Amino acid sequence: MDRYYITTPIYYPNGEPHLGHVYTTICADAVARYHRMAGREVFFLTGTDEHGVKMVNTAKELGVEPAELADRFSATFREAFERLQISNDDFIRTVEPRHENAVQEIVRRMVESGDIYKDTYTGWYDEGEERFVPENEAAANDYKSDISGKPLVRHEEESYFFRLTKYLPKLVEHIETHPNFIQPDARRNKVLAELKGEVSDLSISRGSLTWGVPMPNDPSHVVYVWIDALSNYINALGYTSEDETKFEKFWPVSRHLIGKEILWFHTVYWPAMLMSLGLPLPQQVFAHGWWTADGKKMSKSMGNFIGLAEVEAFAEKYSLDAVRYYLLWAAPFGNDLDFSAGELHRSYEELQKVLGNLVQRVLKMVTNYRDGVVPSGTLEAIDTDLLHKGRELPVKLDAAWCTFALQDAATLPIELAREVNAYIDQTEPFKLAKDESQAQRLDAVLQTAVVAVHAVLAGLLPVLPEKAAAGLAQLNADANTAIEPGHKLGKPEALFPRVDPPVD
Ligand code: ME8
Image (cartoon, rainbow, N blue to C red; front, side, top):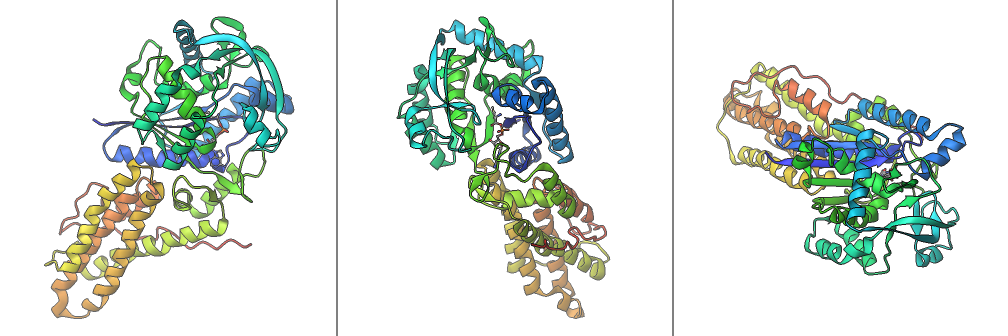
């Protein structure tokens, strides 16, 4: 069986999740649901990244220990994802022994291959983003963070380094010969251009920190964020543990879905680390865009985000499925997006008017004219055309899901629903029903419409798991049912009740 491994970033549990975290997780969830439905063996991983300065600083501000902060908000993320019906197969926390042991073993192996050495590091440091900023970039940004605008801090300390530069030629070659490795294309080109500039070895430890995984060769240092965080993707599969079955199954058939701000780490540090371990590289890293507010990235450090409570209030008002639809619908996947309650409402109305009404309309006609039983008629060109489009939908959807064209994946079935509505307007079954001599024609139209509606609903299942399943239940069917003449339909019920527009 085909295997498919998809991951989200592991999130910092230094506060509640916000729209950005929910976005990546819901997108990954939809992809995971699609591939499961397509019969693939899927492993979907998310989790929390609990070590590092960011956690220590927030803990200090709140007057708690980092471990307490991590426990509290990691649970908040996990519970939020449960309420949002995320179908992850695992949730990894970087404070778990399974992760910490693996990080130590990974560093041990890197030390053994001669890829780790001790030196002094001096440089500009962005505390919000937890990274050293190269001199030229720091100068270009007036020694301020390009994300938060806060001043960069001068750092000098003893540190262990990873020989990143040793792997750069091999990495550039890999990126150039595997065009799908980094997507979208524009982002790949940016990484390649930066790789051709100045890149230095990577500082991977801190002596000044105690909140982290101790370096196995020198416990006075802790492993610094990126080796700790990135290795979660293989540690969750049991890499270096006694049971590597999952690792053998799901590595490297992996796709990392991330926000664009962490693309460099995922496409430069992570592959180099894997090369040092002698492991194959993941199949793809896909970087999506940012939800912005007034043109700035929504983030915890900026405090300008739509929080979990707001997301859940929208789900309460419109249904969770409608929020999922909006997130995928709002922009081509990969682009930045701007949250708007008015646009969310507009996308809901699309579901209501195009999809909800269609399902009602077709079910009611079959109930009223044919006692709810799917008839059989002689098909004309207009019917077979529509049926052909219904059969093409899964092919188009597979291409969309496999290339992370998630906006298309959400809207292609709705486009078909629009065509079914147009087909009904054109064939006018309500008029045919009034003319006994048109009974056979009516049979063909109703039969065609039901089959097409079934295709629409089946195609929407990964995006609207509840609503599409409810629609299918009204058809007395599931995604795999072949709608044959004689099939008895269920009762029509409104899928998308009327909701008041937002007041501005
Ligand atoms: O970076 N728009 O964690 P994090 C879209 N722990 N997506 C957004 C977003 C926004 N405005 N804000 C956040 C970390 N995200 C590290 C990752 S991975 C080995 C370690 C999403 O809590 C997006 O997926 O800051 C982004 O990459 C992630 O949350 C960052 O979450």
